[in-house]
Figure 1: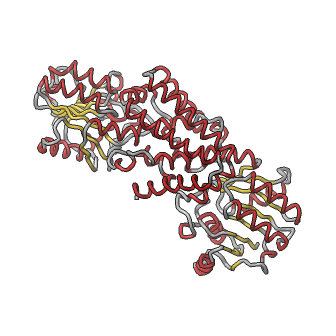
Figure 2 (figure 1 turned 90 degrees about the vertical axis):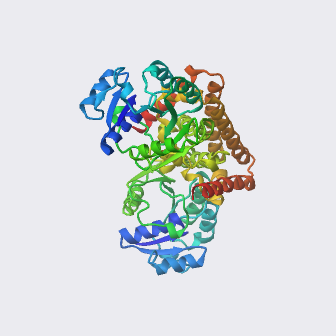
Figure 3 (figure 1 turned 135 degrees about the vertical axis):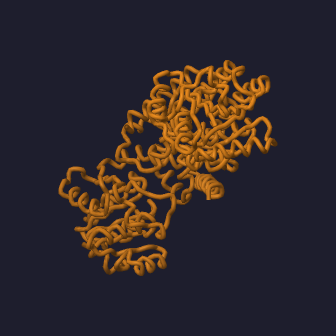
Length: 277
Length: 277
């Protein structure tokens, strides 16, 4: 097959490399930064540069750019895309992207499926892209129709050939609600955590818990601010819920209320055990 | 030398096993739960059971029990301890422990040094103890006099022989202020994080950031509630500081204030890069 990859950052670059490593498909790549496209051509991450003359030949178009750029790209290229093409995006929010992109795909006759690979690094850019990024990762899909079994089977087979171990099919809103908790809130907390005046003097005073808590504090502020604002309602719920929870511990400690503090800690510990073991 | 280890949980059990693995010293062990002491004797983690008749022969006494139990043990056994003995505790708070224990050691003539090994697991108990827990870990020491170089050199050499790679000497209050940030706050946040209604349905929707954020949510509520209340002032400062930081992100998102949100994220990201790279 011919596979287009739009946006050759960490996510798109790794998709391109995973296709090249694991399949015989031809990869058509495009990045706004022309030197990245050239580099990917030279290092074999992609086979050809994608342009308006060859996009119609692509069986899959994988979009891995920011949410607004995803919608803009699809709007701009919609009339060039073949009706047999399946377009999958990789954006970290799904409602806003899918609302616009389902409308475009319905109008022009191709298929659009929202996607979100559950993999990443706290580094960005093609230079960190690796063909193994998706090995054993899961990917979330938000198709317009969840009952097109044949389509979902084909897409699943294609994605599994790149290394993904499992696919989760859900609605855009359900994706956004849960991802606000599992990923977005974690980035907010980690980024906020290092603002303590103690952060700069902790050398020799930390072990695994600090390291894990602050791993994703290093992030791309342009991408994440766009993702956060596109998922405003769900993320605000999570931040407020966490602030309320932290306030319960704070009050128990202020009041020297051992019994309440112990109960709060036991509740959290029991939840963690029941969820992840 | 003869080394006593009081409390054969994860920390004490690992100390005993590290001594047995890396040195020729004799380990005298004691746990309130007699069956643990018996088990450690059988599996070779300790050489002998510690009791009132042999405690005077110990060159080092390593205390790895809860803060209040540390003080109680030392009070009770003080008159049995030789003046040449060095007692080091492993409690997660230092001001409250050191205040009492310096007084006791001054009265009875032996040496007390506050200690805190920067290593642990989110599991507790002798069954998880391992001789390698302290390999390449750092240990914090809070001696009464930081200018007794000979003593600190001897203690450092002893601890390095167990696997510790570096020792950090500081005051009890400085320890407590920084540890509130690096360890205690991380446990509060991780434990609070899993209380979101989304926690129980996240399967397929999470990658590394959720996993790292919630690793230490599973904890021993009895130990941590005691540690938190013994370090009330510093921990409250950290919880409040984090709540205030989170509130800044929340308000920027509520107001669709991209510029402020981006600046908050960039500030956190820059701090993380400057601290840990």
